[in-house]
Length: 226
Image (cartoon, rainbow, N blue to C red):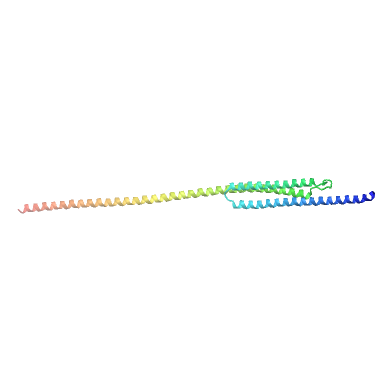
């Protein structure tokens, strides 16, 4: 009887081993799917943040400080995503090690996960470099735009000053011209008045002299008649 039970016990052990191996394989697949979903989620979030950041750069004008703040936010988000990935990897490794006899069954981290991990790190590094490059380029553009705007403001102020000086000069010239015309007219009127007064005095003097001459002529005639 004991010998008869040996094959049955061996069969039960083999069945348990197969079930254990299948369970381990299922857990490994589930862990792989979970890790890949976390990686994809992190990539999607990074892509969305990059799009938002690009739109922010396009909509932000003449504000280098705001761009710097957005760059810091993007870098912090990238670091957070990398930390999430590292946490997921650590959890996956820990759970893989805690599966009974997983190392004996030959269960390893799939090469697909490692490839996705490398791609994610490369993509994240590229995105960080793109963000920094965009920040530098946008900062240079903003600085050039700010300098150009200042130049335009200075040029506008100079033109306004020149216009104001011309206007003041024109006003002063008109005032000087008006004053000169008034002075000239006053001098001419005074000259005419003085000339008329002199003529009147001369005429009065001549009239007086003529009267005296006529009186003298009348006196001489009376004396001669006598």
